[in-house]
Image (cartoon, rainbow, N blue to C red; front, top):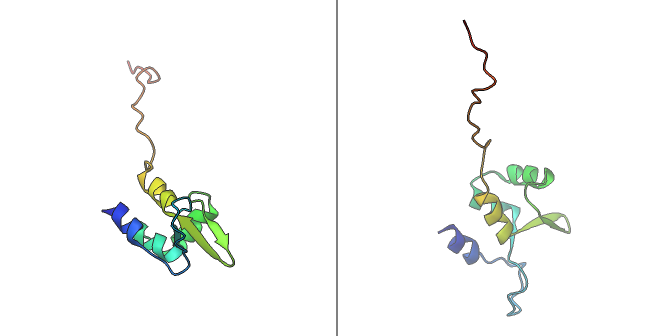
Length: 91
């Protein structure tokens, strides 16, 4: 469903030249809506390097593929089972 939503968004700044070589660009507001976060959070993700964006003039644009990459990455710390060798025996 998300992929359809991303691909269905058309913006006035996009030009349709008939080639599929140019990636679809999303505004910060569109990206925020897709990620269900605020626009400020998207700017923070860009600033921290978690989302790669292009700056055109004074606005940032994010490739739809980059939004998908961010959404599909694992969150949190990976599970690491406790080590039993480092525990001290209590006698």
